[in-house]
Amino acid sequence: MTQSSLDNQKDRIQFEPLESVFRRRLLTGIGTASLVALGANFGGSTSSLLGLLPDGARSLRLDVIYPIGGYTRCLDANEGFEFVYPSTWVGDQTLLYRAAGKIERSLDLPPLSNGDRGRKNVNEPVVAFGPPGSNGELNVSVIVAPVPIDFSIEAFGGPKEVGEAIVRTITRSGKRPNVKGTLIQANLREDLNQKYYTLEFQVESPTFQRHNVAVCCARRGKLFTLNSQAPESIWPMVKADFYKMADYFSLT
Image (cartoon, rainbow, N blue to C red; front, side, top):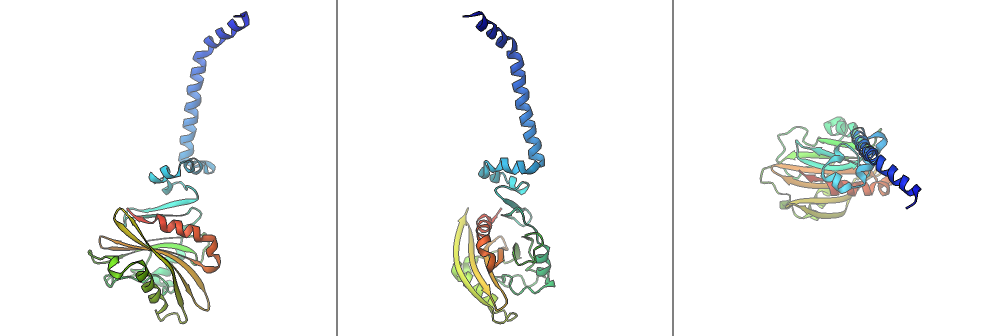
């Protein structure tokens, strides 16, 4: 071994403790910076980090606070449901006012039973979201209506029968003449013995064309309806979002 090699080896031995300290401080600094970023979501860095493991982050419901993959989770612990919606959307006040009766509500999904007659404004959404500045034509909302404790959505038939009944009720409401509806597809999704009816349909008249994706389910005296709607003209641009919102809607 040459003198130069011996000197290099002595230097490595001499500086090993400092290297160890530096490594610990570097890792601690990185860890601390990551925690700060997670807390503040600087420049979307938290969302980017969580996006590396989206399934794990979503299983922890971290997307309630930080968008993951372009979606934020709405978790309503009081009513007992959750779903994801585009992270750029905000609370849709226009739809809430419309549902409260300030604008005609004839195209809202009708109740499936008469068990809610005693409740005022039963069709008011408990949550509603849409793009900033939206006029309410593009949105997603959830309505929770009281029904008998033994209510079963299956008693009204399968997804297709329920979907056709809803479309008929909307188009025959009498408040909007020349309104036509078409059921495009109706599917059953079952998760942990809970059944969800997913319905896709169009509603049109001489003055408008709308595309809807809805999910209906019932549990413990409550009927839950998620309904997303968009003008038919922009449906190709939002359909992936609509399908995702429907797929992620579930009871907690």
